[in-house]
Length: 138
Image 1 (cartoon, rainbow, N blue to C red):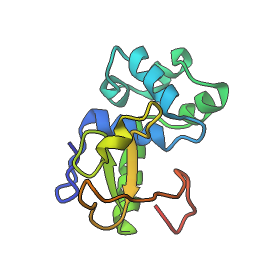
Image 2: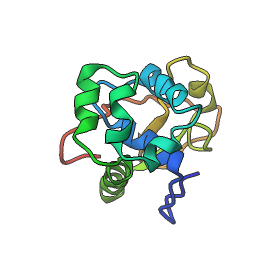
Image 3: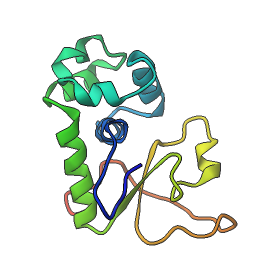
């Protein structure tokens, strides 16, 4: 699991964070990519994008965006650092900060960006935003 204090991201989380930052790539495409990579996104993080992008189950728009990067890990770290610089945190499905009920939704986002401290499970929280905000925000 990612640890905001130590900056540790697993290869799976690196791939997930980098892919989630690609415009046009949503939860269903992420599921298809995980299946394409035999159940784990980690191999995609460990392999140059050019080695797998032509066979990946993504739209041509997403394929072009992915083809513009060499590897996913540097993309993930840029997103991670931009979030830290703006005071935001990242929560992946399965982590304490990720709402359990949201994870039950079919097309739940695999990653959430947030500020503050998540509340008790009985509290409700509204989230509004974009995966692709302006340069001044994460």
